[in-house]
Image: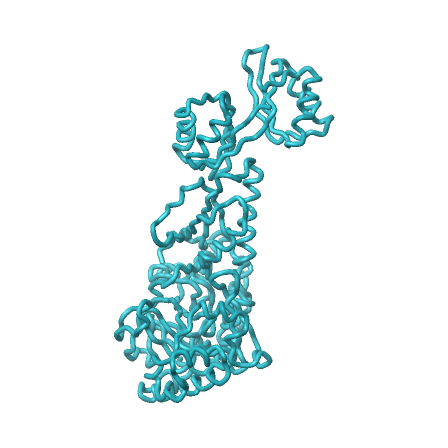
Length: 137
Length: 433
């Protein structure tokens, strides 16, 4: 299962720089990130080359962070694919807590990150696998 | 008018005799009826017989806020509970309230001093008063109510809040006097303008404002905004609530009704009296209360006292506006808030650290705003936005239900609140008080 790193940051200049600085110093590569904003503060979500090490480096510097299992799949980039994906989850009563995605190669490959309830993770992985979605580690 | 000329304008020698008489009686009364004071006086080696004049007051033990806490709920009452006719509470320093009990005579006394206070403000029997202090456990509303009854005013007991209704009642009934916190008065001006009302045309001519510190510039603002006279009222529930002291038309200090509430000013470190006119902590002894008389109660308010006779004719000494506090209590929208109370609340919530800061601000024409800045914990930090939001809501709710005040909550990263070597800087007060 892929790991996502959630870091609590205040919404003010320099915070993203500070957090990524820690990762950079620890020679950790960022594969994907997104920021959720809530006015005064926000959450940065990272997918990194070495989540374990990234977590320890950040915690060491006193950041409030957490590591979380998430599902990463690589669907084909084609019309209706996200709709099909969500339909499958819906049929199985699996709620998507949060998600972000993008296309890597146009009309070929995309990446979709899915945050689900911890209990649903394995089930979703199995189902999506069966339905032909490529699940990444 | 002067409500009780005999007492308020008495020559100082006679006043001293009365104070001496009353202090003797109070010392005897509490020694006999309050195990708390008997123990305190015995420990200090002072007997009621040692109190021969008001000057002997320094022999008596002081009472502090912590005593109120330790005696929760009724152990400071000198009168038996069945003779206590009313109970009020205000904030304590931690989880418990500060409880005060009034006998029937104490309520009459409260009405008397509040009538004196209203007369200081310029009220006359037959005037109409809009009481926009909160009614209930808070002493503001009922204190003014009793005084207004005593004086024979027409009372609109509207209580606090519901600004549009306040303005409508003012507009339709035309009360001459307004009693509320000064910041609420300014807030109402904003609302008035919003509904197309000209504050300068209001019926209010006199305001009795208190329950929170305010400045001379705020007075000017209120007076020019509403075209009214703004006077300052002082009180604290431990002593009686509002009606301990009030400004007269000359606005040169607040007359303290010293035949009832005897004031001293002490150095809070040495507990010794300061020189006449110097600044220190105001200590008050109630001279003829029965329910819960207090000996030398440390108010933690910093003032100076002017003993000169006032141009208004009153001889009662005048305390300055409150110049500060000896503790870290802040008053937000008229509600006493101790940082320790907030700490108490925060400690009970998982996911945050007891590192916090209180930021108080009052933007022009707005009510006080309290923001609680809290650090999230590194380890068990909630990793989802919804749980962070829930954490925020929980803190807000807990503070609301414990302190009775709305606070904004700001979550910040660990170790971002400034640490200091000694006492943590818990309060940042941005208000120009």
